[in-house]
Length: 237
Image 1 (cartoon, rainbow, N blue to C red):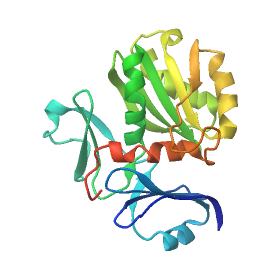
Image 2: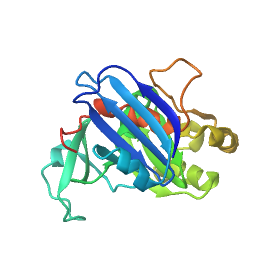
Image 3: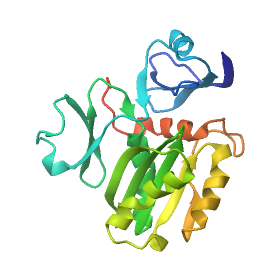
Image 4: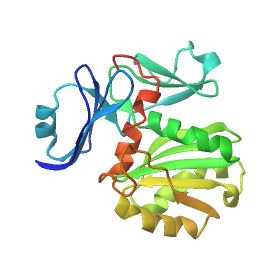
């Protein structure tokens, strides 16, 4: 087990802890009752070693199935599933539904990260690319077009999923503002590829309580985890 990042600030007694592990890298982040981050640890480890160290916490999942529904239909049963659902109210009269007592989807903080930018841009998409997967939050006129997770084996497939909802809606891709959240070593190749086809592409915002230029490795995951106190999660997720 290799310690890649270890931040502790203040008393973490009673703090709510969130955990994520992708098979090689584990993240643990905890927040006090005020929503302040009191622990942030990143470990390169096998999953069994990571969870032997962190035995309690709310899990985050990369490929958790979600359904985005209008708030007016919140009480309507979802015909595509018989699993009991957790429902999180989102801005703009939308609700995110996902299987209860399972991992919280990373699509939830991705939506929160994307929503403010979506109000500033007529056609906007934020994608998170990580370990052959892409999460997409796409908006047009502030209304969600797509919030979903896909397998993407390369940058070209990620580009396809980023633009697909706009192509289906008949929106020229040259009018779409695209932001990419990904690992540091993947960002520049993706910006170069996307820039060949798009007029507006840039890196997604990383907002963490560290000095500028001193962010941890795997900060794409860290940035999404840091948004969790703002996401309206139930006390026991």
